[in-house]
Length: 296
Image 1 (tube, rainbow, N blue to C red):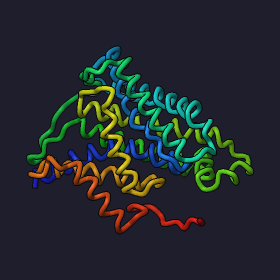
Image 2: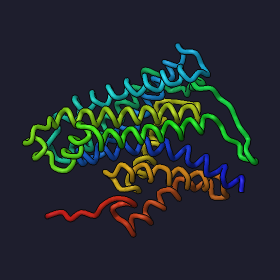
Image 3: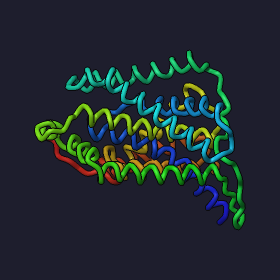
Image 4: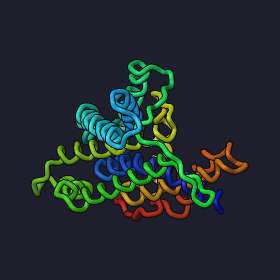
């Protein structure tokens, strides 16, 4: 039983990180109806911003850790809004394929710029938060795991409050539903879309920091696989659905952890994608997604 609970805790910790990244994918899709493939590399930039900030702040302190987390979120929010303004806004109204190719290009630009600026050699992420371990009934609990789950839950709650309890959140939902109608009633679509990119990028940065404190080796390509799995999580939960992205991330992380601890560990990635295929065969819109009818 304790082994099962240990695997579950590890899975929830990993899934919470996937959920934070998936929320950025699903928010951008909900507003603009396209996938920002550069999002996974914003996750990487957030980890490196945290790495450099952590070198100038005392380690193993709550205040230092929060400062690094908030600093990385602000830096990546600015980066996300800059990407939207320079790369995606000029293509507003262009064919979807053009935007998709641009997103892949921005992703590659960030990856290779990261190798040029940060270097390709993996680096050890500093211990920005206090680290401790507790044993409860045979269950070994790391303070880093609790930090990941706690911070993720807080950020998801804050996101829900922003989307459903603020004016900008109302504007985001209006633009998602009908951008032309939102513009007619006075919503500045450019501001709303820019804010959406900034908010999603800030969550990706938080995911990067939390991932780095649990797996403390970072490099410019570190966002590729977590970003791909977070994308799968967003589809699994229902792309464009915020609670669905969170659920998909937690589910995928938990399944991956249980498989990694079994005799099928070599196939953990294949099994994760296989689960996605199976679920989509029965629920094409995802677990919490809504079926819509499109006119053709």
